[in-house]
Length: 195
Image 1: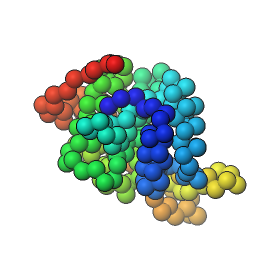
Image 2: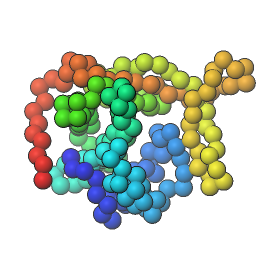
Image 3: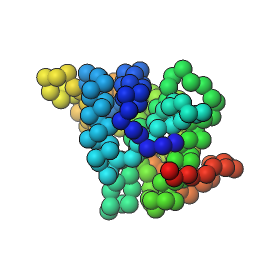
Image 4: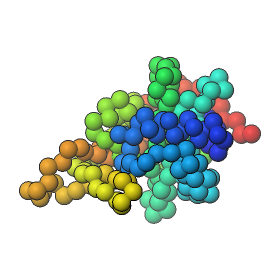
């Protein structure tokens, strides 16, 4: 893994992956390479609160994993993105990547807990998270809301007690502690190399 870069290759890959997995994100918008380039520059590289790593296998960029939203009061952050090139297959890779990345977060950044959310129908990703020790703390009903005239939308939590609300999707709210991660870490051998 290496920190994300703003190269044309990376911009193109991230744009394609975002399009491929658009139904698994809490926001949706018109996706373009220009927006991806601006996101990398302004929301990632110029933002000390966001960490995005590219995942490499034999010098090939095959995915990303990232965290954001550090909360000083709870000493926690959010695992907000993990995706890989859909044509690349190596069984167990993303589970191992997630375990190593999150261990690094706990050990090097001394985070107390990591939280996250994902659509409850995203079974594949929830299976990976479960293998890493995540627990579901809540299941929240959500609905799609239009943000503006540019066809940007966001999935937001709603009050399910209302008779008018018939949610079509739900978020699994998840949480991980170092203790739970280490129960599931197994005997993964890895090395942190800084260049």
